[in-house]
Amino acid sequence: MKLFSAKNKAADSSVQTSVSHSVSHPFMSIDNYSPYAKKQFELYESLREAVPVIDAAISKITRLLGTFTLKCSDKRSQKAVDDFLDEVRVNNCSKGFMHFLYSYFDQLLTFGTAVGEMVISKDGKSIVALYNASLNDIELKVGSDPLVIDVYVKNADGSLSIVKHPEYLNISLLNPEPNSANGTSILKGLPFVSSVLLKIFNTIGVNFERVGNVRFAVTYNPTNNSGGNTKQRVSEIANQWSKAMRDKTQVCDFVSVGDVSVKVIGADNQVLSCDIEVRHLLEQIVSKLCIPPFLLGLSWSSTERMSTQQADILTSELEYYRTILNPVIRKTCKYFLRTQGLSDDFEIQWSHINLLDETSLALARLNNAQAAAIENTLTEVNE
Image: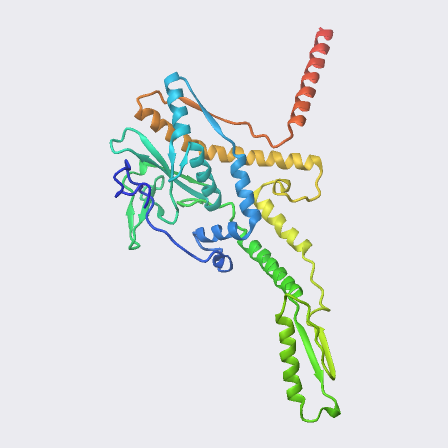
């Protein structure tokens, strides 16, 4: 039973953007990747599941986004909006605006498009919940007005119905192409590299399975004195060898008469080293995701200055993502305050992005303060 289904009498309103569900093989879309396809929702989901470093990078970027607070000019508005951000219901089992925003941001990074809905009460006087819509249930199109995106819901029969209240929706696009209603995922460009990486991992698994699960070649060379019993002896040797191999609980000795040799199949083959190739592929993935390798547990050789520069680059990326999410926060909180008859004058204040060591930051502030004090002293002396 859906949380906001129209049949649920306890719900204040139904969700517009939740209709259908789809089930597919997890990794089929990676091998069937087409660079010219417009939508690759299933592909990007498979990438995150198949390549753990991609999922870890997106999860860490989401957590590094930080939190925010609203500073209202009115005390009543401040108290109301603080309670709303902490207590608003999100989806079917969460509470708090940050849960909605983190899921919204995760969807934005993975698919390049994110859609969230404000579930309004029947009287239209309050927001009862926030809902993260699945992109498989909706269709975004550029309408007759190129400045407006029309939102359609997919029905059970495959037809499309336009959303009746688009003003309740929050839509964000990441680096959209001109005259397009869909954004660009940060995973764009990674399917080919990831498919090569998966082939290497699969080959490693097959090779180690062959090495660990040993296969034997038993050869019987009959002599001139064997007579006509060659087939019988071969059959007996095969039966006894199979019996010895089936019993894994104890050590069995194989005793035979005649010229019988036993060799391990593939024992003389060397397992190929793939460290350099895997690192090259991981470097491509990490560079596309714009996250420092040390945050993913990759201990590549780098200087302290290089790590600092990588942290600064990630900080600028996070600041950019915050500018995309600010309209979502502003629209939702303004609607809430207006429905409560309160002032909607507020300022969004994000938490400080700190990717460096606190000791280094404190030392830097100390050095700046000492330099400022010396400059002031020299200025006074010169005067």
